[in-house]
Image 1 (cartoon, rainbow, N blue to C red):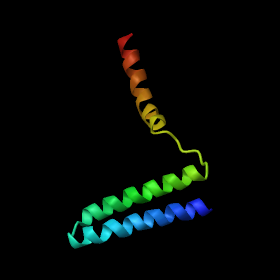
Image 2: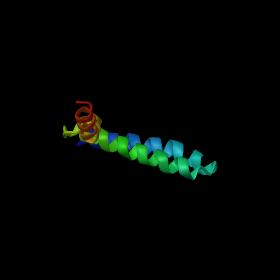
Image 3: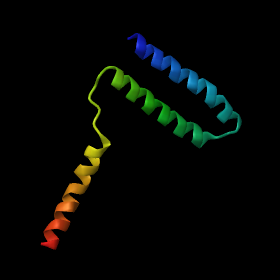
Length: 77
């Protein structure tokens, strides 16, 4: 629990360090992308800390491309 709070504090301090500068420069799109990546990174760090099973991106890629591979293999026989 303490480490989760520590991760949230670090993420908030990163946001407070960078977002005001981006606001002054009127970088709205950059703020949105930065916030999405910061939230994603924070969520993944907390999930790792809580020892949750995080699926590999390779599983999604192989799920998408295995039917295509099977089709190509069947066409070449």
